[in-house]
Length: 260
Image 1 (cartoon, rainbow, N blue to C red):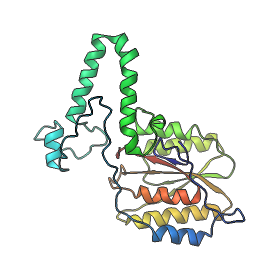
Image 2 (image 1 turned 90 degrees about the horizontal axis):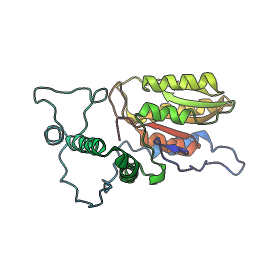
Image 3 (image 1 turned 90 degrees about the vertical axis):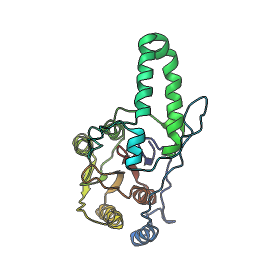
């Protein structure tokens, strides 16, 4: 999980420090971060799927109604407004899932013991470029809440360590933070977000909270934030927040449940 995490990124970010070993002047750090802030989303190039035949990807379908019509099987009279709680996956994924289930039912032991491990490796290889991590660092979990629990419950915390998160965090993840704070020396601090607001404001509020923690003699060990919020359903400037965490030497735990 390393110092920059999308429930899987294992790079060790270099702490920016002066020759005396102390953190760079906080005003300088803030100025540098805010001046370089870019709210434009960054998208990865489509990865080659782990298909031995390496078939050419299908032509891109525009987002919106064409994508719904081509890739999903929603009833034409039904308009889904909440894709998060009971969302559907693309029809091609459903069909392949059924195909795998049929194979397992036909030959359970050979498929589960011999076939599935290689298919799992192919899937990890396919998703790794999307996350920007090596294949061996990709671990599949049932859901993002399980991933957040896995990360937070496997870190060692010392006295003075703080986790910074936002008031818009998913409820189950917030409860995990509460539990970890009750059972370890970790302390938490929440940054209140009240929409509508600009992405730059979100980043500035985060930086100010980190500064306040350090000014109080404590250390921000980890920060947790989303890619897309549950309530309200808006995109978070997570790239800029990761960049801020790199500058401070803070672990980034990104809840990418609505992104990946």
